[in-house]
Image 1 (cartoon, rainbow, N blue to C red):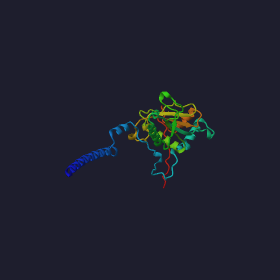
Image 2 (tube, helix red, strand yellow):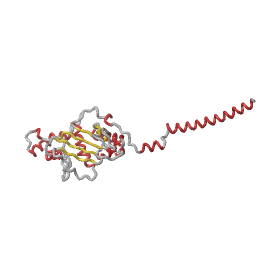
Image 3 (tube, rainbow, N blue to C red):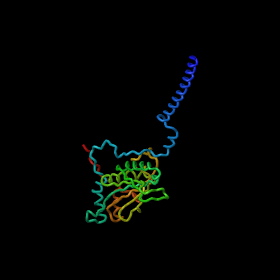
Length: 264
């Protein structure tokens, strides 16, 4: 009887040991699948998703404690452009001389209805380009053919005023426009009859703030330059004197701005 109980105990112990080994192997495999390298199914599910957007407007930089210098293009407007426009059109009142009021950047993302995360990337890129947090635009009405619902976020826009407006125009004229593919000058027929000029940009990569390696999808945007002019001729002369390279110019006007003295 003692021998039989020992044998039974040995057999049951062996079976239990083998079962515990199987459980340990299964646990190791399960732990490796969850805590270790991701499975193939998780990789395939994340392949078509856009990358995670980051809000760069909240990051600190080395010169944040320094005093901001006045925009050099604004100084050029006050010192040279105002006198030139007054002599060209015979303005006797200083308030009649047109000036730049604001710049609006608008980017529509139609695919955001199906991929909401794609709009986050566009908002991140607009924040990098302008240095200001964009506003998300929503659909005003539902369109069933496009799968669009009322109130759904389908775009983003930024309105620049003051120093950021002048700095953006300076970078756009001197850096971004020469980077446009097959650039032959900006069109002169995009004025709206009330002194405002709108142009379309096909690629966001013309702006030097965009990192080429981080771009997942190429998209364009509309840029509107709103002026205080009441006639297109006045607005055209203003933008031309500010350095906008319009089509047909043999030598575009280059603003000659005196560099501010470096702080001691």
